[in-house]
Length: 480
Ligand code: NAP
Image 1 (cartoon, helix red, strand yellow):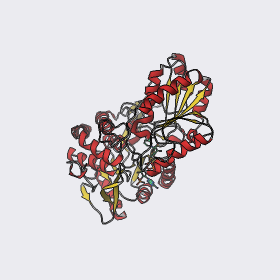
Image 2 (cartoon, helix red, strand yellow):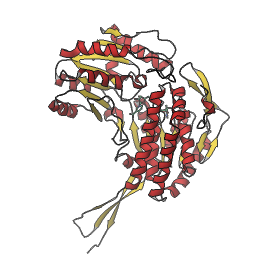
Image 3 (cartoon, rainbow, N blue to C red):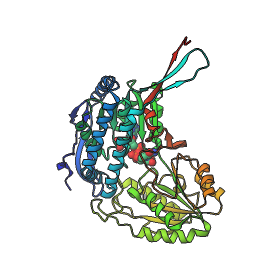
Image 4 (tube, rainbow, N blue to C red):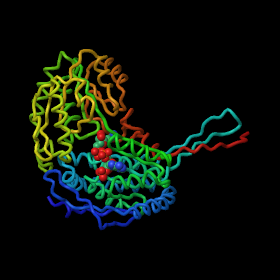
């Protein structure tokens, strides 16, 4: 599939309303066969620094644009994404590998954040607070200023719109550095943003060396807020780099999601929930089930049912309608999954279905292993691939304790038909999100985010706007 002929295809950077090329370029590969799709620019440091200055000038005007107008432009952008859903999804599948049906779903999900924040743009309410003194306490909500975003490859559209849409709604300007594996989806949605009518400099997409761009963003006093989605390791590094300029930060970092399946669960519902959360995007999601804890009474029955479903998954080219699992993003990702499987087997776990080693190129066969314990690597680290390790537990307390035994705290899942248990366990889990009797929790109307080493801040929902707004307290004195 030659995506370079699609109307939304773009391989130059959008900077202050101009589409820029560069002498030096980065190759973008198709993970299906590692063929080169195209190249994108490695922008010069001087161009990036000037982009920050231009974004600051643009933001000073943008924050004063009427909220109805900001809302209207966001709505235009939402409409354009949905009109070009198939083309955008094709680009995403070719550069990222996920099945086309999932890519289409991601475009709709990405667009839903733009729609949501086109509406929230009108609701940046301030406050008037009763005061005991002879004064009035007023709270204004004001745009933070120029923002920067750094995003990962696993959701090349949604991880961008859930930062850019609230930023623009709030009156901020923003510069986005997409992952080097998947810049084409970012550039295509930027092309549609330009068409939607946003003024120059408000939304910019910059490609190139991540370390250099990260350094410019974090060291610049112009950038007032950095929003990062990616690994905990890089998130912590960016936080440290940002300390001297004391930036506002949102960090959406790694996960290690537990799924707790209790004996009262509807077994078919639990198996389907695990399939949904474990194998979407070939297991390369931050909210993906990493550890599956099943109560001893139903353990073997659950394992058997899951095995049947996993063996039905079709691997292949994401552009084929029958494909459920595409290639992983690169060879390194495959080797990490194999390492986790090998480690589990060497420490006493047993293979239920799948392939334990020698997956070729970027392909990784969906694999299930049982009798897994907390000592194994997959209990401690994020696997980020189609590997489902199944642990056994006997009591609710034990399941909660094993689930919380991690530095991470993003998503967690519970399957139970016992209403009291659902409340107790949801309260007991040290996670930012809990899915109960479902493996699908993402929603633009919900606050997405983690605790512990999984990050700081929330994206989406009525709370998502606050990440791009500052409160200003105004004291009106001598009120009589
Ligand atoms: P990553 O290696 O941390 O990369 C993420 C982004 O950071 C990419 O754009 C990357 O650019 C950039 N980057 C890398 N090194 C940098 C540096 N020194 N300075 C500035 N930027 C730098 O993570 P990933 O492998 O792409 O994504 C997978 C991780 O993201 C997983 O841990 C997953 O759980 C997490 N994630 C979290 C959420 C959430 O909402 N919590 C959502 C999705 C993914 P290059 O591509 O150019 O290297």
